[in-house]
Each structure stands twice: as C-alpha cells, then as structure tokens.
Image 1 (tube, protein in one colour):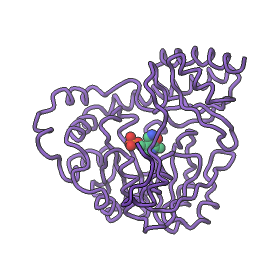
Image 2 (image 1 turned 180 degrees about the horizontal axis):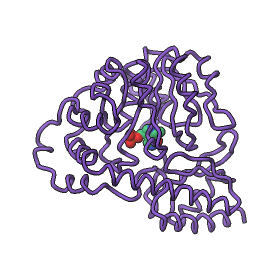
Image 3 (image 1 turned 30 degrees about the horizontal axis):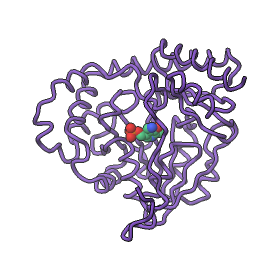
Image 4 (image 1 turned 135 degrees about the horizontal axis):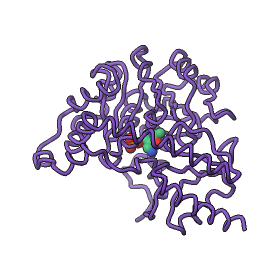
Length: 354
Ligand code: PMP
C-alpha cells in the first residue's frame, strides 16, 4: 500500500496515525484493562438469546431506553445523557461538537493516548501539559493555554491516579470552554464527578461499559452533561450509532447485573492492591492506582514487555513517563492470572537485567 497522499485527501490526515497499541494476540493479555472475569450473567444470557430482529432492523435512533437505564444507574435525569459507540465515540463526537476548526484541546500528560489523535482527526490544535510529580494535573499551566476543550482523566490512564476533587471543581469553574472528565475507570475508584455535570453546564463526564461491565466488544459508552451540551454531542454523533445488539445486552446488564459488576469491581480493587504489594515485596514502587490496573516503574520496560510476551504474557510498556521513567501498566484480574503474570515478570526482569 502506498503512503503517498491521494490528490483529494485532506492534508490534515497526513499527520493522523492509525491507533496501534501493539496488541498482538497472546495467551494472557493484561494490556487493555477490560474485565478479566468475563461478561456479567444476565448480559450473557441476553446475548445468547438475541432475537434476529436485533440484526435485521435498525436500532433506536438515540438509545432512549438505554438512557433511562443509565440515568437510574448514574443518578441523573435521562436528558443529561448521550450514548455512543464506546466512549471513544463520545470523545470524538464531543470534540467535533465543541471545537471550532483550529481551536485548542489541552490535556494533562501522560493520559489517554487517543486524545491528541481525536483532536487531530477533528482539525483541532492540541497542547499536552506534563503533570506534576505527584501525578496530579498542572491545572495552572492547563488553564493558561485557554483551551476550548480541557481533558482530564480520573482515574488517569496510564498512571491510575485519581484527580483531586478540588482540582476538578476549579477546572470547571475557571476553564474558558468545556471540561471533559473521562471516568472510564470510575467504578473501581468508587467516586464520580457526575454531580458536577448537574451543577455546571460546561462539564461532560465520559463513562463506558467496556471496563467494569465487561462489554468492551459491544462498544457502549456514554456522556453525562447539561441537556443542551449532550444534545450537541448527539447531533455530532448522529443517529443509529449504538447498534441494536449492544443496546439490548447493555440494558440487561444495567437492569440485572449491577451486583455482579460491583462485586467484581471490588475484587479487582482487592487484587490490584495485592498485586501492588507483591511488586513492592520485589523492590518495585508501583504508583497509587484507583483503577483496575497497576502502573509500575520498571527499567527497560519495552525489553521487559518483549520478554514477557516471549512467555505468553502481555503488559503495556510506557517509555520515559515524566517523573517516573519507564513503566509497565498491568491490568488486574483473577488472582491465578496475577500469579501467572508475577512468575513471567520475575523471569522477564531477570532475563533483561542479566
Ligand atoms: N478513556 C480511557 C481513559 C480509556 O482508557 C479508554 C479505553 N482504553 C477509553 C476512554 C475508550 O474506551 P471505550 O471506547 O471502549 O469506551
């Protein structure tokens, strides 16, 4: 395939990469922070019994039924919700909805790797502002960029750090534009900023059913914000975006699987802290995490990642993160899988540092 630009292509797209998290298949994949306990039971039953009409007919326009169920789950009125094809779709649609061509998206870094790509895809400028040594966003520097869109992720991917409530509240009060608060991992943190979306009209809280709900393959995400704000995201997103199978299964999960989801999120938290302890016992200093993964500084993380892969285990390496250096981000799941990881990690680090 030629990389030459087609005569009719937008110049802007030359600089847009395809997302490549280097996720080649492996026996034990701990790279994507999905639910390693599997799919919730009512969701699975519903999935297996889906009527053919869910395939042959169009889905609902804007997922009204799902919004009602999400409203009950989150504790906001249904008109504060917009659904999407994964929270990726919410982020992308919202950037299109609120960014005039060339206006600025500012994000704390390191954070979700898709943010600069979504900005570029939508013809927006991007400023990444390095976080402070305590893993908190440098809010003064972020606000100084006067962003049209300010992105904060709490708990943050890849560090796991929860953004201080006072920082989020100040961001919402002082930002000149819209504040996106990405809560993909909120269920593991046990706190949410959904209330901020009820109190301020410039907040979009972004959530997903890909992580705690175990439905990543169905692509169900949602945004929470003032009704006028989420309606614009909905216009930008377009109709029929959430497919009918996803909507039906997600509804079952919200109506019948809440206990399963909460129990397994609690298990993930227990095993996360146990994994962090096991790493500390080996002399490592994992970062404090409020999510379902552990980010641990490891010298030569890319080489260690390759040595892990050679043993059938994948964790996501990050090179030279500010203040902490190379790290591995490890998704948390059932303890036997964590033991498998630790055994491979011991062998891999021994091989790399030999
Ligand atoms: N936000 C964050 C912080 C994430 O880590 C991810 C997934 N890696 C997403 C959003 C997108 O998730 P999804 O599109 O599956 O909802």
